[in-house]
Amino acid sequence: MNSYTRQYGAPNPTCGWTISGVVNNDVINVSCSISATTLSPVGTYTITANVTGANIADYNVIINFGTLTITQSATPLIITVNTPAARTTHPNPPFSSTITGEAPGDTFNITYSTSATIPSPVGNYAINGSISART
Image (cartoon, rainbow, N blue to C red; front, top):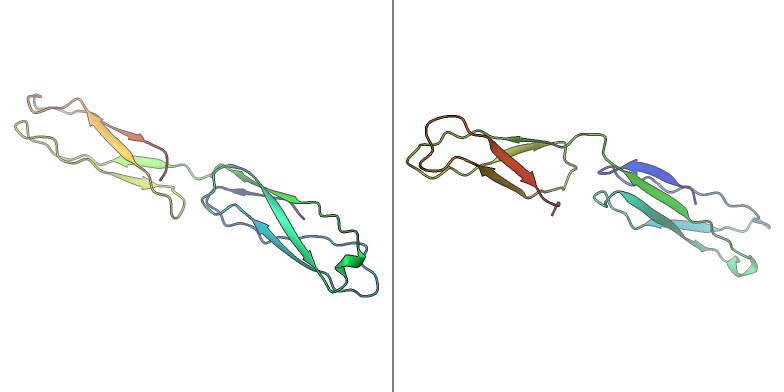
């Protein structure tokens, strides 16, 4: 089995392999399997193979499994916290943000905090966003 590297969020490659030692025009069928999905975390995953054929029992089959290595996405994950208007006599409005650079299917939990409270004087206050593990 061949080995491959891809970035997080990219599709898995099509498997490839090399067969040697086949005689008598025997037909050998190979299929492969990769347990990683598009959203599998960064790491290494074994590429396994299933080898079949009418005369496969006549062979000493040795399979050299491949490896899929998933690396970090080259696209930065950018979180832009939206700036709402608030009134000094009312609770803070709900905070929200815009996320760019996420892989298709990724969702994130973001919590927001600010030092502005109901008795805070008029002014500008930072809104901080904190991202937790993806869900």
